[in-house]
Image 1 (spheres, helix red, strand yellow):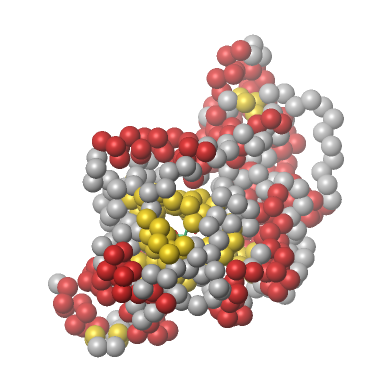
Image 2: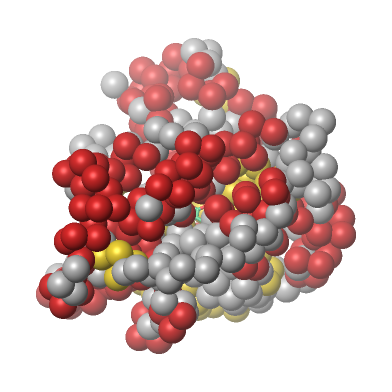
Length: 436
Ligand SMILES: O=C(O)CCC(=O)C(=O)O
């Protein structure tokens, strides 16, 4: 457990401990007044309406109130909104946005330090606060990776010299995930790292969560945050934001000529992303957009992959009827802690559930067939990857059906809006008519 040794910074404990503390209820009543009737979840919801200065004032009301008003889940969106609001403004500079820089270990601390220097040390002993709602994020932020989650290798592995024809026949056409070892070892991108990227693009904003961060600021955050869901860079605009990055990699030859979306030119859906994450960050369970296949190449660090075939949603993950929304635990670590073993049991009892697990190291590439569920956990700090999605001939009918029937879910505004797409050889009308 990463942080449990030093305890919750606001002295929060799981609710069950309150039964051993005779004065717990009295402290709660005195500290929260009538607000205690709301219950923890609703009190936090109420506090979400407040701005930074009001939240700051609540922190002064009582130790109990401070336990709620200082919660990171309130400060992260507030501070990010300020970061977001400054994105693209003249204040966006190497030192962060509007003077915001990441000093300290929490969003609140970073914000306060950026505004008015370090907060004064607390002299009074903080009394214990008992709340599962407040404790949960801290618990999962402190949970370390269990080696048993990482020990199974069931994704097939092949050498980088596999021919395009073999790859097509054995993997893409069989809808079979595979790791191609050493596939991108020759890319100049293998030299990407915190130092090399920050020296070239430190002031360039990249998307992480709902905000754009200058790369240097993001690395400062990634190095020392204590979030249960650490933000990682997942940027689909990197090619326009830092075009030189495109010179450092190429589409591997097994995918040459395979992407039918190339015919759409500017109107093609989103297709390539730069990914940079630290240990414990990653992508929760999802399906890739537009029924595409994808490749994901790691140039630094390691990624842990779990994949499940189409139609096999993992336990703890609840897709909406139309597949547009997926409800699941807040963090990947929470999913692994509560559902990984259940998935193993389910897979043992149901042979059709072909769970594929594996670790992709620097230089390796994983192929994700269309429609496969997957989640990905970054195992090392400064794990860097490039991913591209493509519409293959193998799955073209499901891609076309998706684009026609789920226009609102297509991951590209121009494509959604367009009523007259032309994809060489296909006219938009025939595209639609074919499917109905
Ligand atoms: O590297 C990752 O976090 C996974 C990315 C991914 O799954 C995706 O782009 O669909």
